[in-house]
Amino acid sequence: MTLMPRLEDLEDKSFDPFEMEKLSTGSCPDPYPRIHELREQGPVVEGSYRSNFTDVPDVQTGHLPQAMILGYDPIMKVLTQPDLFTNREAFMPSLGRSFGNTVTVMDAPEHTHFRKIFQKAFLPQVVAKWGETVVDPVVNRLMEGFIHRGEADLIEEFTHHYPFQVIYAQVELEPEQAPVFHKLAIAQLLSSIGAPQGQEASHKLGNFFGELLRQRRANPGNDLISHLATVEADGEKLPDDVLISFLRQLMNAGGDTTFRGTSVLLTGLLTHPDQLKAVTEDRSLIPAAIDEALRWEGPVTATMRYVSRDTELEGVPLKEGTYLNVVLGSANRDPTKFERPDEFDIFRKNKVRHIAFASGPHLCIGQHLARVEMTRALNAILDRLPNLRLDPDKPAPNIVGHLLRYPHHLWVRFGPS
Amino acid sequence: MNCGWVYEQELGDPMGDIAPGTAWEDVPEDWKCPDCGALKGEFEMVET
Image (cartoon, rainbow over all chains, first blue to last red; front, side, top):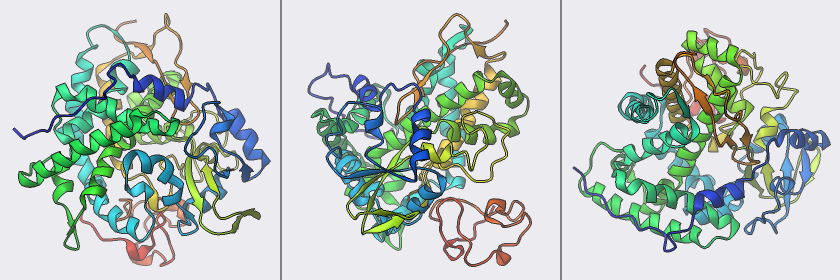
């Protein structure tokens, strides 16, 4: 039994960060027609991505000079030239404010140094072991809650919980603290829309993780926190501020994205019964199904970079100080790279890789864990929910949002017809 | 080490013009990791 510090809830206990978050990510049913229109205007279009879809103001970057980058090749050029298109300035007003000095807000050489240490904990051979020991028990426990009913909402009862519970298991969080932990993790992001609870949540999670690190250093176990608290590279441990920032980001980077990615994967398969049948009968198709879901409806449609000096991209001048909205969704649906880009087709033969996890040195550090989690979740669903189908008496799933997309419900039936 | 992408000789990197079966020694020095862009020299050999 390990010690666990107490988490402090928000002062305003009636504050609902989940509803506020839906406001900030929007309810746009399909941003892709507009994304296609923008891409046809050229690789660089002045303005912010967000302003195309919502009137909710961006209080942190809304007043800064912004341009959208659209299309696969221009986006790859931006993501793979980190000296020219940097992260620190791009994310300091948003993620930097929410999480602190995390690897996402670092540039080389600081980023190269710390990324190498963190990456050790998330290499494929490391996270593969978590599949059986951490992910499977969480997945099976959640399914026990609805498997006897023959029907379920796979979002509300499954995908919205399992990646977060994987994180709770990795940090050995007590179940009674989980609701406040989840609430604070989501509330952190609300600094971007000016909610004071954003900074309050960042501060309280920071206190919690600081105390947890002290405890795990004194009495290390086999959990992720103990590993990160003691891991060394070239004889150096990770400093507390960097570690606490990373842990603050873990729920959002590792939980929110996997929850949305799995939701989209299940939606893609359930709305294409022929492809669901193929995957059910041939599990070697699962990696292709995961990659197609991430290409088709990547959970994060846009990221940011900052122009560090005057330059040009595909012949278009870019001024130093411009905040680039790198529209990943436009790359993953670029018709010059992907035939019938708006269709979900797990059998497609791609000429290039999708970039749902971005590309370049800031490529998603948790992508291997995300794949393990999605694979385990899908296998369990296909194994334990026979004859899985959409519930004909409930509304069809509807993927919404302009930035972080997912369907709010996915009502299914299973068992005998 | 930067991103965890593993080069497997059997698969090569067809999208990066490295045919399946190409030995690691024969992968050109200017080849880059298809995910994170790390150069060949930044890769480390791992046991599988």
